[in-house]
Length: 400
Image (tube, rainbow, N blue to C red; front, side, top):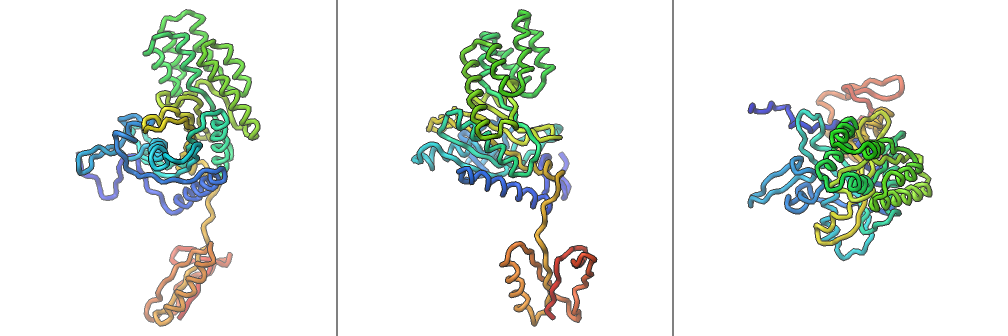
């Protein structure tokens, strides 16, 4: 293996230049302020966690975890999500705090993907976890907050696809009793949105024509509240029926929030079926082929940390959102002032700089004039700003 060149970076990571960072920070600030208004308090967790606790409990496949050893030979992982670390905190440092607990976060997370996949190994998330409430009201709350957060981030056009793990589990249990491998294969197809593969898998199972039509029919279960009634006719399995009833309740609450226009029921939407236990959803922005938001209910996670409790939440992929809002305009940069000075007037120049900085909204740079020079070499533009060595300033103040 050749030694990396001095300017090379590992696959899947990138540098963010000042303009991009300003946009990313603006998105994070607006989103966190929105979450705070809904009663969610921000939490910070470590970048490194123990593999045997948080690593094993996370929703991330083991092969996608970044692992390393500490000095004692203990396996650590770089956090692949924030949900599992929050479950650890809720079960330990917050064990005496009564439910429900509402927490928010923003952080970078790490996942190891194949190099040819072209996906980020490090990306940024902002999200919430609502722990200790298993009701349809709490599921609807996190969906409504996800919608409000996307709007706060500047995403103008989007749809939330809403599904339920229990519906597909119940349907497959009814139609493919005790056939675990075919059920797993069909779920994998739906998880990857491989509808052609889904149909081909069904055809290869040798099922009755009626059962085959039933399984293929769920691909058409997408739409508004009417999908609930249609789904209830597809299967009589108790788990599936209960799941649809729950989605109906969630929809009613979303209508009360006034946000149901942004939601689409999609019963092929399964999320990570090994992790989620109920409602699951994804948010798609217009003109972007992958989700900018995902979430759902995960009632089994906290049991692994010794404090069983229902939980639901979501995460926004803020670096993906930055791609969306980047097409809609730029973040307005703060006004910039340059203060040039000679050494004898240094204190006066610095006092003026501090005065301007204290006013807020102004970026102030200071520069020592070269010996024998009384000017900084600025050019005044038609709009009244000044150009100095390729940088535009609102004003140039000289102490000489």
